[in-house]
Image 1 (cartoon, helix red, strand yellow):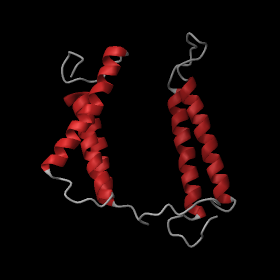
Image 2 (image 1 turned 30 degrees about the vertical axis):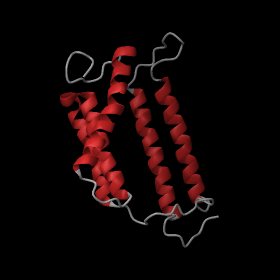
Image 3 (image 1 turned 60 degrees about the vertical axis):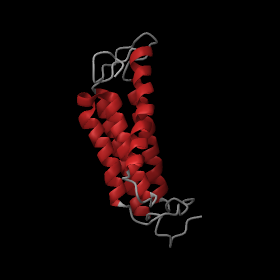
Length: 175
């Protein structure tokens, strides 16, 4: 049951705005699907099939969100707890990790780029949880090693086993 007094549950106007944003994302995906050739491949399905399916499902979800918002709002929404306002510092840490990875992946390679992304994102998540002392040397080292331990097997699986080229630091396909 919706608690209209709960500050964590957005108003029906904002709920409708979320639905419209989802519809716009579906339209953007459909425009992108138009750019992909539609010639059928081996299984009779062209390379633009999946983007069209995703666009259609996303559009359906957006339409249902708008309908739900306009018919009284999300009736089963519950206050998820937490803070009523976003915390910008953790958001900035996570965003900087994603942006750094996108900017540096072709320069420093997939493994180091993803490890850096992981280390920065974890800093943001720790700050969101209210942890202090997140910039200590041991914590940073563990975060960096954990990021490397996650990124390296993914890189090797894609380059060695699936023969899918990812940006590497060297031409060896190992780093």
